[in-house]
Image (cartoon, rainbow, N blue to C red):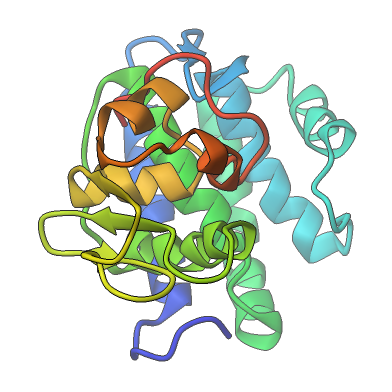
Length: 225
C-alpha cells in the first residue's frame, strides 16, 4: 500500500467516482475535447475510466496501460451514452473496491488524475484539495524524484506543501513556486514546459523537464485544471 497516514484509498476512490458521475451527468456537451487528453472527448475519456474498472476486475490489465488497451476500452463503448456508462461503472464499483482492498489502491490514480482532466475540459474546477489528490501527488512526486540527479536539485514550493528530494529549499539550485494544486498536477505530468518554466524563480529547469513527464510527453498547451 502506498499510504501510511490513515487515508483510506477505497473511500477516496468512491468519493471521486461520485464526483465524476455528477460532473459528466450534468455536462452540457460531452463531445468537447479534453485538453489534457487531446485525442479524446469528454465522453471518450469517461468511457476509458469505466473501461479501466471493468478490465481490472476481469484481470485484463497490462503493466504499461498501453495505448491499444485504452483505445479498446473506448471503442467497445462507442455506442453508449453517459447513462449507460454510469450504470456500468456503478455495477463494477463494488468488485473494484474489493479488488483494491486485496491488491492495492492503484486504480485511485486513474480516477483522481482524470477527474481533473474532465474538470479542465468542462471548465468546472473542484476537488483540488482532497486526501486522494494529495496521495497521488505524493506517489507521483516519487516518480519525479527517481528521475532527478542525486543530491539537491529541484525544490517545489507551494502555499502549504513543500518538497525537495535532498537538502533544503535554500540549497536547491532550482526552485519552482506555484499553488499547491498546480504543483500536484505538475508532478502528474499535467502542466506544460512553459508553465513549469514560468514558475521557476531560481535556476534553470530545462535539464530536469523530462522528470515531470510522468505520463508521456508534457502537454503542448497550458492546462488550468
